[in-house]
Image (cartoon, rainbow, N blue to C red; front, top):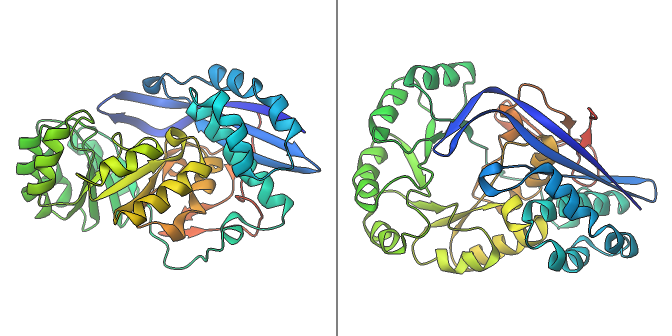
Length: 339
C-alpha cells in the first residue's frame, strides 16, 4: 500500500465571488491510494473559510496511513469506520481519503462505482452552472460565454431581485438562487414571491444556520422551495432540516465523503426531502465521485471542474448539457498533471 499527495493551485476561468470573498485560484489536494497494481484517486479543496489547508490535510491523512495499510483489503465503508475517529476533526481530509478508497475498491472489483451500488445511468439530473457575485454586466457576460439550461446564481446583496431581473432579460434558463445565508426571514419571504415570477426554481440557504425561528417562519410563508446547505453539514443535520427545509444539499467534503454521503441521501429520502449533492471548486477527480451518486438525486451542483481554466484530471465530464462517463472502473478519474 502506498499513499501519495498531489497539491494543486487550480486556476479559475474567472474571478469567483460569493458573500464570503473572491478568489482566482483554488488550492486543492489530490490523494493517490495504491495497492495491488491499482490506484484510487480522491480530492478535497482547501478552503480557508472552513479552516482547511493542504498541509493540514496531508498531515491528518499521514496520521492514519498505518491503519489504512493494515486494513487495505477492507471495503471503503469499513475503512471509513476505522479512520473516522482519527479524522473527524478534519472532514475534508477524510473525504479525500474516502473517495480514493472507493475508487480503488471499484478498480479492484473491475466495476464503476454506480454498478457496484446497483444503480443505472438513467434520468440523470443536469448540473447547474454557477455565476458568482459580480457586476450585472459581468454576470451577463459569463452567461453569454457559457450558454446553459440551468444556472445557480450566487447572491446575498441588498439588490438581489433587481440583479435577477436584469439577468432574466438575457436567458430563458432556469435559475437557482444561493443567498449564502445573507438574508433575513422577512427579506427572503418578500424576495421569494418576486423571484418565483422570474423563473427561480428554489432558494438555497437564504438564512444563517443559527436563525432557526426565521427558517420556521420562512418555511411556512415562502413561495419557493428551500434547500439547506450550511444547515446540513453532517448526518445528524438531515433530520433537523426536515422541519424547515424542503430539501438538503449534501457536500462530500463537509460530511467526510461518499460513505456518509450515501447514508445522508437515504435518510433524506426517508424523510421526504428533495436531495441535492453539491461540489466545491475542484478538479474532475472530485466531480467524478459525485457523478456516481446522480441516479439517487433530484438536483446536482457538480460544475466545479467546469469553472477551471485548466483541469488536472480526466474522468466523468459534463458538456453538451449531459454527463459523460468514461469506460473506466471506480470513479473513472485519473490525473493528467502532477505537481
